[in-house]
Amino acid sequence: MIKFTLYSRLYCHLCDDMLQALEALRGFAPFEVEVLDVDQDEALLAQYDELVPVLVGCCDDAIALPLCHYHLDVEKVNAFLAAQSDHA
Image (cartoon, rainbow, N blue to C red):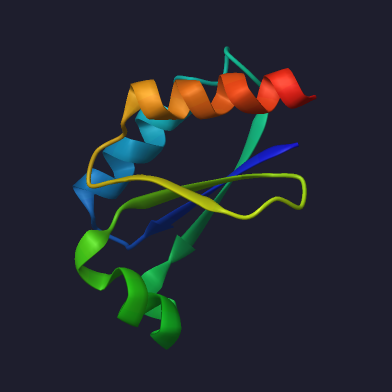
């Protein structure tokens, strides 16, 4: 299963925009999205504070791959979805 993690924070319009743009890609491949609030975890805050939103993709037990931050890189996410679908 393809999984995305969106490192986000409350009251972040870029975070909302990225999630909405990602949801629009659901027709290309099935995937799950987990949204994590970086402000709720000191380690995540230290890692992603100035970069949110950050989208990371993972498939099964593979290593998580950072795909984009600030804005959804549709081409990169579509390429990731296609590559993961090819392995399924």
